[in-house]
Length: 204
Image (tube, rainbow, N blue to C red):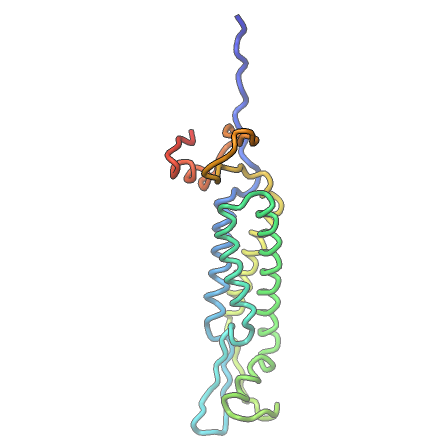
């Protein structure tokens, strides 16, 4: 009789797993989105009695921040079901979104007068730079958005580096018998385990 050889225990994927990366992308996108909806720049010192101040939010200063934040949130949600090619695309999108959010936020921080000038012109009806308010205050909220962008950047980099190593659970309801079987011996992450349970199968 031949003695069965012990099988090696499945090795966990190195780096952050998929569930954690999804959380990082969703959190980064949400932080950037929340930060962009708040007041970033406040201008005061107008001569007109009926205008005490003009406030500018992040999304008013740069609509691309809100757009890229929503793209990031969508990418994070898509990562939970994406396979190898999809993960690579999501990683690229996340990195580009993070760069856009960070660049736009820092642009407002470094040049608040330029950012708020169109809003002042719209509110006061003046267009000359000499008519811009004497006092322009910038809050720290652009840095909150930058922090969100850094989280998104981290999530994108992790997805590119480790995404191909994450296990692939069965995501199709019907599969042809001649297709290559998924390696169920590989360690599944929380998302794959939930997919197995939702189909009434025992992931263990």
